[in-house]
Figure 1 (tube, rainbow over the protein chains, first blue to last red):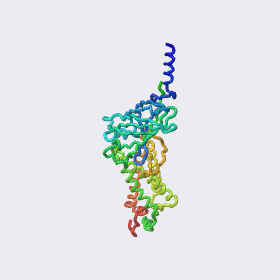
Figure 2: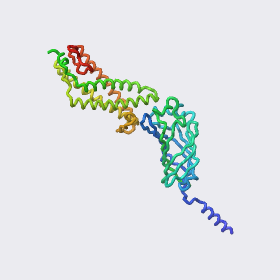
Figure 3: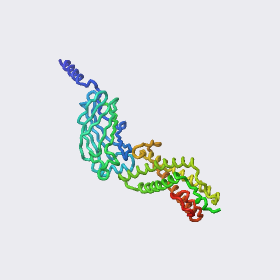
Figure 4: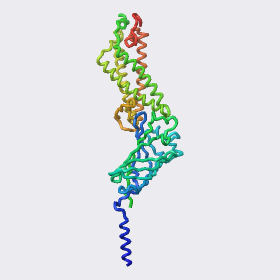
Length: 183
Length: 190
């Protein structure tokens, strides 16, 4: 009797274990990057963020159960030149002193077919929280995606910079996160 | 021999050569002024605009000097006055060659500097000029110095060029200036 109960317990445990079994639970920061391209007088300029932290739980077979959040250290920006780095920290741009971090917290991840997915959630930049979404592909543990952020939505670049004539409103954001499987 | 006869006989540069010369004068004076002014500005939309305009101006100057050289190669300039000592004639030729070299080297150095600093040149915001160099901050700084030095050399050479023209006109009184003048001399005027 005692042994039968033990066996039943074991069977129940085994049955509840995920079949796909591969859930990713962390991101390897060294093999990940977060970059952007903005247009200045019609000229594309590359930039990136050096410091960001990603929390995630993601099973490609069951994306709807997954979630992800990103915390971005805005002072770690490389906006293309030393001049630009100083400028974007100012009140008119990110106001990094008052708002040192930008965050994204997912509310939904859905499958789009194949290895394509879409993540939706809330983006918080400079004290403003707005809905945001991005498509991405996921294969061999690497999430690769891009979306367009409109800087005007978050008042990034106010005053003399508010006009999109010199620095365009649309900022192309690209991310590539290498995920590590959980236990 | 009367030194004025050559000018009076109407030996002038071709109209195209004269037009290109003065177009270049206006363009290069503008480019140097904007270049000096913009580099000390605080970052602002105006600064970004000026940089772009300066780059477009630089591409234009480069194209114009190519046209000038092509024209120069196919149209002989009027000869220098025979009253001019051979040494000064050679100096004049060397000065003109140096001016042409600088007019080529300065826009090229500006373009390379821009690439090294990580900003592609897009002509009039429409036509991307390929980057020959990849972004490299140290190289960008070095090329900025090269660009500035070449411009100082241009300024000095242009001063010499203007000084020589003034000497020809007021001291030698050989009427040389009329060869490049936008208007023809009245008979006997120099």
